[in-house]
Image (tube, rainbow, N blue to C red; front, side, top):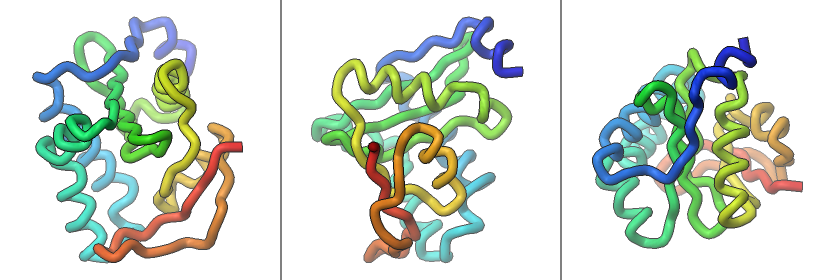
Length: 153
């Protein structure tokens, strides 16, 4: 199936202003589907605030960069990087394991080398496939989000 996505017109590019609401929807729906179960109620609430349209726009205005993966004019993945750190990397569940996340990272690496991420427990193995390794034990942020710090080797 991976070849099908590659043969379809997968486009990776910087986000356009009108796309922020859809990018937020992709992030939030994917989080709810795959990662929320690994978080406390406080962590779910805190992440929801981090993933709003306004929060994504604000980070970009403050120096972050957001890339989107698009197939047939539909956003299927989002990567936001700030100072070589992944703030967000989400690919719709039905499009995962098809090279979309890797393509987003490759695009970001053309601008800067992505070095670190605070990965949710369910995404550690995916980040390891991208060349990241845990560099500390699981932690919980002050606002309740559980994560594993990882660094790219």
